[in-house]
Length: 288
Image 1 (cartoon, rainbow, N blue to C red):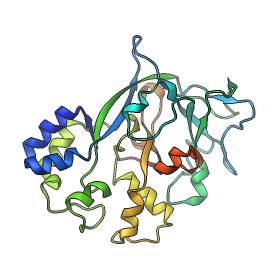
Image 2: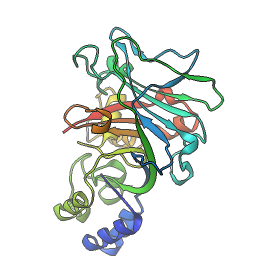
Image 3: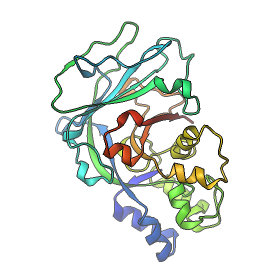
């Protein structure tokens, strides 16, 4: 929902919350790595668009019955200040992100978290640092996105007060995903957060900047097959077990537009990240 320096967020919180509530809220902040278009003097940590470098034995990701996925981004883990984050990213190697963007069917087939049959329409791959890789041309029918180099900076991130982890601190008995009676849910504080920062942006780690309800809830509903109601503690528990791996916003420089100025999100359980089980990452997307 919001990103910035800890000092700036502390100042904002103390303007609208009691010192005790402000300290609790600040204790929930998480470091995230904001990815921005690199200037000529910046260290490049990855790219939007272009063509991926893949091992010779790796197949280009595809959605059976629909076709190959478009290449979205690559992140060089060795170039990230990963020790500044609270997720266990690899120290080296490359993260590659693919998505069925509608080029091949004019947007007819949608990749939706709630539709298990569509999950193959989004993939992420981890390629180890010692793997022999070569740039791979795009499959027939796919036009690669323009290459946009990315630089990274670490900032603190805050999330919605109705996010399960925040709600558990300030209103553990409130209905999941809804506003509740506490100053962190006041319109004044919410307006101040949006005025401070309303950009989704590209990001590794930290809290996702969800366009709609917290993406963690969407993923939890999908994993639980939509069979758990929002007032069931199991849904909140499941949602709290997922962390953002990466989000990619719509980006003019890369000719990327996800729905109506939306964003793509990949989430993963911390234990799967620690064990490098990237095939268990989950995907969703939101737009306004």
